[in-house]
Length: 303
Image (cartoon, rainbow, N blue to C red; front, side, top):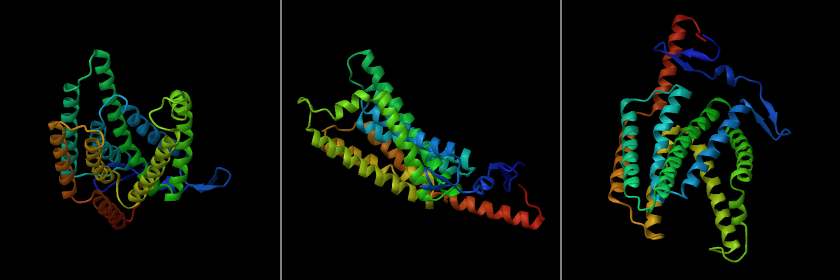
């Protein structure tokens, strides 16, 4: 086998990062940060994170608030698939069944959202569906971002390294994308010509509060990934759906449809099923132990 692959105890090829993690550390950005992984990987992590949130934010223009937060449950099967592909982690039937039930809940809500749409013409309907698709793409990219972040933490560098590189490329990509696609929106946000819905100072406060909370969110997620795994992170973040629904009812007076409650119930059932199975991290650790024992017994190291 090549240096990039090894064999597990079932004789299957799984990706190994052993040869990559032994690269010599090097200084980056005028010596501000020591990095261990390839720059292209860090760039890709930053790009996926930026585009995930960009799709979700743009979808707010066209689709419903509750739909967006409910559809973010798609990050769960996304994390399951990408974890299997990129990290070679195995999931049991109960994990997959839980993810499938979550997707079923999303499909119910999506079909209901389209069917009950009250917009007046075909163009508005198409834009509404476009918003739904953007939210779905954003959720899938969120799952991929979590998996890539977990891979960087556990196979390449430390938390500080991920924070720095993710912020470096994320901020750069965001600023460039704002200048290209959202220049008018940025000018409107900071304009003060007298017909805005709120004062400039109020908008700046809202923006600052969002940045602070988003930073806290990223810090918490990265620390979670250092001790757990991406799929469980996506499951845990589903609690935000309930808070989003409460906000839409109390603040905006929007009552969810009956299909929303059915969808949310299915998602809860999927989470319970996933949690009822043993942790895939424990299974992976046991599998690696079996591989080491087998190599020791045979006196051969397979790399």
